[in-house]
Image (cartoon, rainbow, N blue to C red):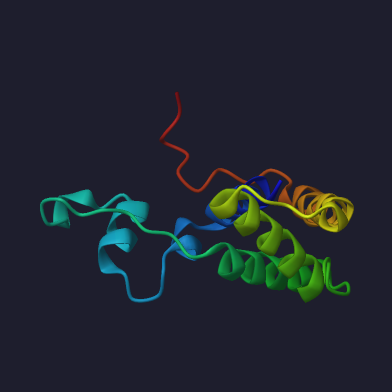
Length: 128
């Protein structure tokens, strides 16, 4: 669930503008995500913002666009990311975290999905 939350947030932001997932000041990633790869040095790699960063940005954009209160809390976000890290890095998730983790993750994904609408036309000329 934690990885899904992060990836849904990144997909939402990319649907608005790919630059939103680029770490601040990372020129190579900016070039990659803007499609200007002819300016890249050999071996350049794309990097993205952390899960915490993309969730903060997504939450702020949703709140601004909808004019409503925060779609999820800092506590929801921390719960999801803490459980994701415990699971991914240690293979552990405490019994008392499981329900909160799933409820918080569902709240975040539902808020993003409700706001996403018809995103994805940033690069209309790139279609399968």
